[in-house]
Amino acid sequence: MIDEEKQRLRVRMRILAGQQAMGDHLAIHSVLRNLGEWKTSAAVLLYAPLKGEPDPTTLTTTEEGRCFFYPRIEGQTLGIYRMKSGSRWVEGPYGLKEPDPESWESAAPSEIDLALVPGLAFDRLGGRLGRGKGFYDRLLGESTFRGTKIGICWEWQLYSAVPRDSRDIVMDLVIAGGTLHGTRLDNPCKRG
Image 1: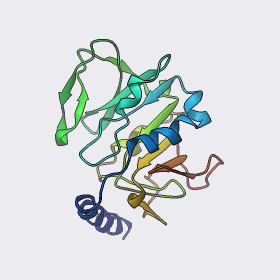
Image 2 (image 1 turned 180 degrees about the vertical axis):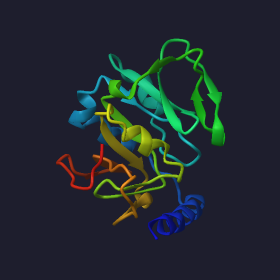
Image 3 (image 1 turned 45 degrees about the vertical axis):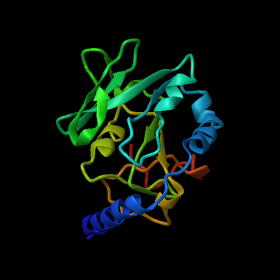
């Protein structure tokens, strides 16, 4: 039942993505930079966006004294790689831009202080609807991952509730457009 609800919402969100105007990345960046979690995080996991997703990659050009990491699909999991001088990108599955493991440094989930996470839809309590493969849920649900999880989306991707089950990892915060949602308090639905 939940899987069917998720699939219906995924179809709806993909249709909406073709109809909605993308928002302002800078509004999202502004909210993020004002968060205490951002200011105190030395190791940040970003993502290379798919078409239509908010783009966090420009954050690396304005921040000094911080290490940035990106995920790479490796079988059924996401490997984590630290960006360094001379890091190159390769095209991965689903047309994703991914770290070239020959020019990036492999890292562990335990190194991440803060993770910016994409999704098709989010809700105000941190619920997230991904694309259906479970990559981020597995990564963020690892016992060694202790970082703050922040969902990033456009305002039109925010719903009152997204369907979720016990496998779904709840975000600590959600930035939708230029607005912050979620809770820093312990959420009884949160795993990980």
